[in-house]
Amino acid sequence: MTKLVPPPLLSGPASVLAITAALAGAAALASPAAAAGDYDVGSIHISQPWSRATPKGASTGAGYMTLTNKGAAPERVSCVSDDASAQCQIHSMTMEGGVMKMRPVEGGLEIKPGESVTLKPGGNHMMFLSLKHPLEQGGTVKATLKFDHAGTIDVEYPVLAIGAPAPGASAGGSTMQDSGGAMHMQGGSMQGGSMQGGGMMQMDKR
Image (cartoon, rainbow, N blue to C red; front, side, top):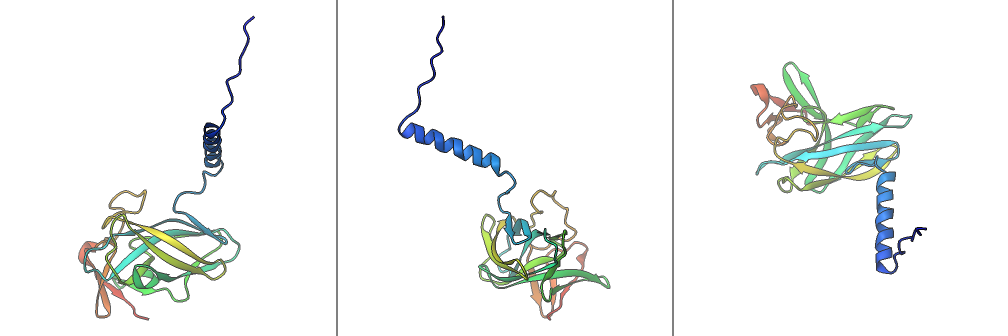
């Protein structure tokens, strides 16, 4: 009769390594939902934060992300500070009389219960004012966001190439392209570095 002989049990360092590898694999299988770069604070889920590199001499940059309110009450978000500029604000973009106007969102950007708000090029976005240095591809911008109810959280925005589309989006999908996400102030107005159609953008200083 053929006898089945069990394989020898591992002992010492080999055993520790095997157990560690098994536990790591189990943990990876158990939590696939937490994508890299996503954040949760209170009832708010923050996904896909990113930014664009800026050309030399640019005084401003921009940050983008998607905010989802999983709670039952509305939330408002504002940017407290960041490590790349002197001031951080959330700006809205509206078309008025053929002119794209950009203005700070007073009192924070509202996120209604069960809804998602996407900050993106050509739309609402986070503005880094008076840059301390150019935003370089491969770097990150760390910003502190404040929510009325959820509290505060630090979010890192990976910097993509100048003019890059949103992660996962096809190139050219944006309705407006500026010079790497940067805007250049000229008195009270702002003009995108390469806005399609030669339109003008104005910034309300409120």
